[in-house]
Length: 262
Image (cartoon, rainbow, N blue to C red):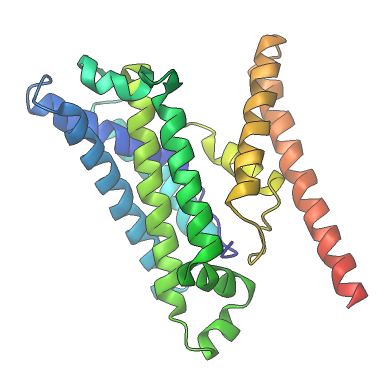
């Protein structure tokens, strides 16, 4: 929506999760409310990294693609350093419940996903902050001349992304029962595919959470279908990459037709 991109989400997911798991094990593994400690650490790490990347982008005017591309390598390397590339496991039942438990038959991760999606939808559609995000993504210079603090809005978006990435890292580690150094590999491509399929323009200012949710569900169904059909993971990467290119090409074509009509 801001015309930027975050290629570091997969690496940051793994880094946040392993930081949380590492602290829990350092405190004794079965520490009281270990899930809360891991959740807090993972979200705090994700938020801090999001803030750092956002500040580098806005302060030094470095393109988001470059900053997050570097972050993708940095945070993956940091993840491998923390536990020498090995996984961290042995979580107690209260920790694993967040990934495997359910409430009234609905899996906890699904409930968390729904809550986050609803909050995001309301924030973008019905709040001043949401309108500011669209304004900055549509035309940053016009937004600045209108009195908006463009740097603040952009940085806040990367902070939110970092926080949610940390939350996802915690949930994944709880679901797997292990914080893996290789977790989240290739997730950045799935994220981009979900966003562009959901109708959000990579050029900024157009799209929303509702479409992204649909895009994420479509990608999930597609990947699960390919697994059930015993399609090689190598071909799955080819398919996802092709979808991204076609979706962006269609978005560009639609924009050019719209510009021509104007």
